[in-house]
Amino acid sequence: MNDIYYHNSYYALMQKNVPFSDARIAKYPEPVHIVLVKGPNGIVNPMSASWVMFTSIDPPMLAVSIGFQRYTYELIKQQNEFVICVPSETMAAEVKYFGSHSGQDIDKLAELDTPTQATSVIDGILLSEASANYECCVSGSLCSGDHMIFTGEIVATHINEKFVPRLFVLEPKKFGGLRPLED
Amino acid sequence: MNDIYYHNSYYALMQKNVPFSDARIAKYPEPVHIVLVKGPNGIVNPMSASWVMFTSIDPPMLAVSIGFQRYTYELIKQQNEFVICVPSETMAAEVKYFGSHSGQDIDKLAELDTPTQATSVIDGILLSEASANYECCVSGSLCSGDHMIFTGEIVATHINEKFVPRLFVLEPKKFGGLRPLED
Image (cartoon, rainbow over the protein chains, first blue to last red):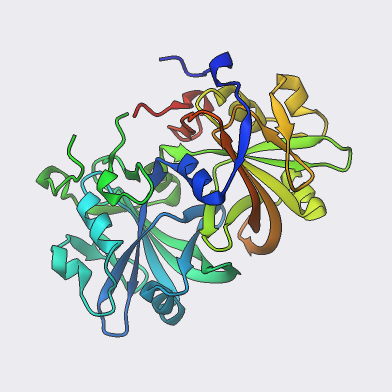
């Protein structure tokens, strides 16, 4: 396959103005992440989240946008540290479950018997099957509409011993559509 | 293909601690974007950027992380508005060029004869071949290491008249590896 794709008149089409709700489809396939934070009860709570990006190379940093209503929002404010997990293609069931249940009353990792292992710097947990895990210390926050953006300095990084492709969400509002990308 | 992938013992491997530079590979394939800002010379400057995420549903908002050394950083500070373009699979040449040249001395859109059209709210320009374009007004900023995070309220959204798949970067430090995902 060629490395570079050139203009194709078929695609030289005009943009049309639409409501935001219609435009969001353009973002798919979208990478998905799992945010892990230890609660005051000692239980680490995982929440699926798409809105994560790297923000700095030196020092390595990333940002995550968390809804004010989420249990994870309260936990990050209390704990000031979190893990961003990059789930592998085998973890669609976890991402679906972690994104559709609140951890306020249940131990989601125990419910699914998800393999975990110890963090190396912060007080938390890593997901063993993931493509990668980033341990982060909160360094700042910025309110953005109905969410809070937390920036985190990446204090430890972990990848799978073998390369395992990451998971993507393929369609909006349809977690059942989760599947690995065919590369 | 099944919707959900279950645990596979082959993938139940342990995480290993690595330097951040090694762990970044786990983020690929990574969605790519083009940030467009009008300069004081009246020329709209496009810069390729991967670090973009949605941050709010109501109001619709997004965030972009821009290096302090970038011309685009100066332009956003001056203009306080920008367009985030989601390039289509036909725009790999643009993404490669816009991501490897500074607009301080050249008119990048003119150099490539990139099809554009008028914005509807802010003072800028849309890329016609793109999968989508979001017009944004800056609402906040947060320093994050060697980059500045700008949040923008999305004041107008545009999508292509036909669905055109978005472009992804498949490998680190290798823009030549840009190509559409095979879905």
